Length: 259
Image (cartoon, rainbow, N blue to C red; front, side, top):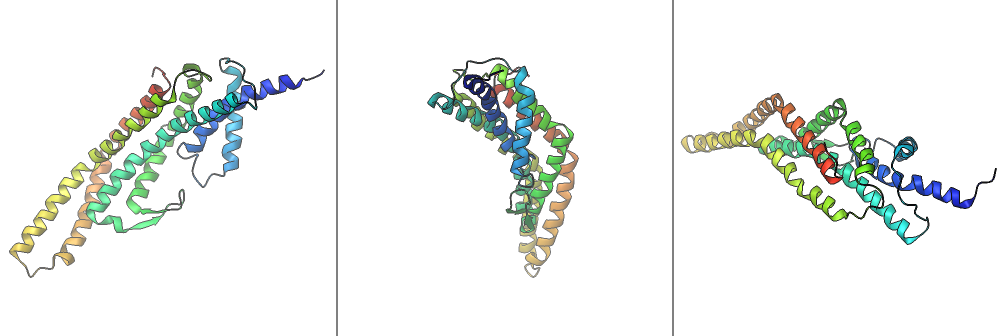
């Protein structure tokens, strides 16, 4: 049995382009893209998923490898996967931004620690909310749902389609408003409450100038911030479910899926 070079190239082309989209997604998606997970593991995971998924994908026109057209398609599929994976990062960062707003307003932003996933120094409250949202993301099988949407995107947004990426990237950028809107909604009660506390300290300082507002006010503001954070956690689940639903809807809209 002889195997021609053309057959080998066609087989490689059939797997390389789907691998580019899946690897781009796994390179950016939350949890899997963490620095704690080796890049070799992510590559092997992308290869395994590609090997399982490709036989069930719809056929697309054969593309000759080592050509300019193949290079353009390879970059295009990688960008599609990166854009789809970036949605999960934006969804989790919503609650990090909201928690950092509360921390800065209450004085809890001074407490910082090193994020093992990114290697940067971040506020402790933001890291707490990030850990909590990551665990909820895994508990709701958010990573599996998003991976399923990426696999289904090969049907609704096939390889080699003439559809432009401009609309997809525009929808991704436009969805950034939900990042700040949801973060502000989560923190608005704490912001208003801490504003009232600060106004009360200002009135108290004017009424009794001998009281050192920095000695009394700063600890009381921090305690108030911790109490307000506890109240925020009571209503945290509806915010998370709504943002996760909007993230999945965005992914479906980006690849023309009906969800």
